Length: 135
Length: 81
Image (cartoon, rainbow over the protein chains, first blue to last red):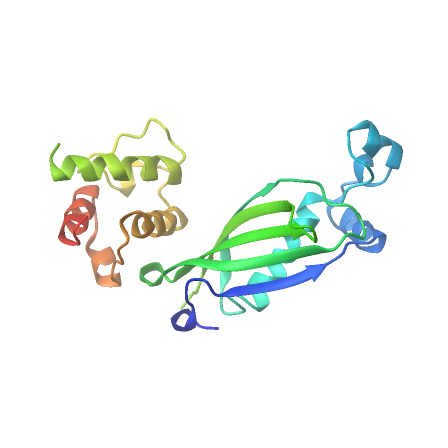
């Protein structure tokens, strides 16, 4: 998609679950073996009902949506801000939504709202991204 | 309060947020050379935030002519801010 085609309220969505293989790959990629992601007893001692998915892994799904669908492969991400509002557990379905909230053609930049929710609608992540269209 | 003062009052929190400097004083003479955090990415964020705040769109020509905050304020006034 090019800058001229972009409009406020355009959306892209997907739903995913996270499994142990993905957690292991992420752990090996970034070097984070914190026990809250691997030990049920440690996770419960920290107040979670079970092991939790890495927050950056949860957020990383937005890279795929932003980079391939909305705003798409003609853009690069300039900045991302996100809040990890609630923990994500393995094997639960998470719905991702990206919505165009502003198009600033003067600086060839789109602002997008990011949200991830459980199936019951509970928010687990909220954020914004600014993506530019290099000439 | 003059129109110019009212605009400064509206843009000041934007400048402070974009440049992450709560003590930043926005004056008409302020320009990028005086703010270390004012790089190209911050400039984009600044323009995006200003367009959103005032419900306006700048042209690339206007942005090219903008050298100081004073230039910005005159442009905002001309767009009805």
